[in-house]
Amino acid sequence: MTDIELRPPLADIQTEEDVAKLVHTFYDKVRADELLGPVFEQAIPGDWAAHLDIMCNFWSTMLLYSGRYKGDPMSKHFSLPIDPGHFSQWLSLFNGTVDALFQGEIADNAKARAKNIARIMQSMLGFTPNNNN
Image (cartoon, rainbow, N blue to C red):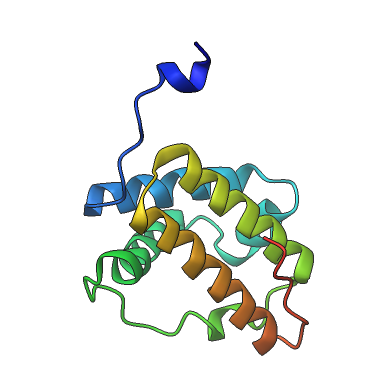
């Protein structure tokens, strides 16, 4: 038997607690990342609790259709020092986090939505979207 066969199957994203687990785990990885960490620390100096609440509301709306997020996520990114490499790394960390924690239709939807968000944001910032992730 392999390690994969010994592990129980992962559940899908179903609750607000699942969304919070995804968001908090993902942003722990972002903050520790050599490429993304400095960008986020500059943009969110010392205000991580508020940012994480906003991100939980955003992903709750995207995945559970809760309607908890009210805002404009695109405009907040225009002034950041980012390029297509940042988006590739963001997607890689996001997809890896989803895959480590969940599996199922909503987990797949989370990855598809993240890829679409990255594509749209890159286009709005004047970059050619990288769709390799």
